[in-house]
Length: 218
Image (cartoon, rainbow, N blue to C red; front, side):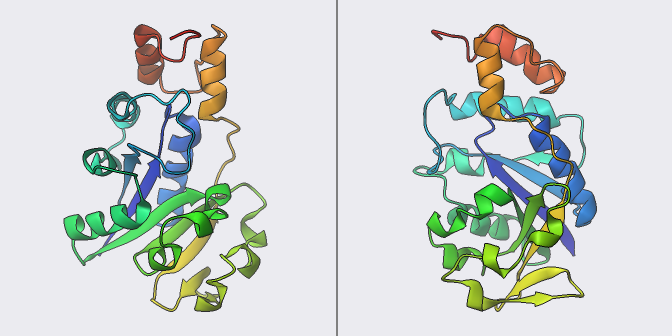
């Protein structure tokens, strides 16, 4: 059975703080590949400085081009309306078939807000969740971090080292290298006319500079 990661986000722009954790969680959970899924209309993000989805998708493609374990998906771009994960996961279930094990990848901060997502109770019945934890924080994840209304649906499994939902899917917190890089900070740096070298892949840096993205007044 193949194990596939689903990594969504605005990627405005994509950077090493996305790429390195995706690589590490692939190793930690023995994933065969990871799909990067740019959101067209993210419901929990401000639209300020948000580039059109097609341009953010281009940067994702450039960033992952040399990693055979990474793939691109336009699932949330071609689908009209808000980019809801509860609609994206079933799309991949249909696309990849029942013989594929799906792991939805997200950081702890995003996971702590999952109770405000669309149909959170349904989400945990669809696939596994891989939670990216900063160094030293993997073991602090507990039932207290689960959505209050749904915590009773989970129990900890020592052998699997995860919180298993009554549906059979689990939440797996895993430590990854913490890179203090954010898309917001990168946009600020570009707006100040400073270098973003070593924050983003070279091809992404060239594309941002050539297109004049995130410049003041652009």
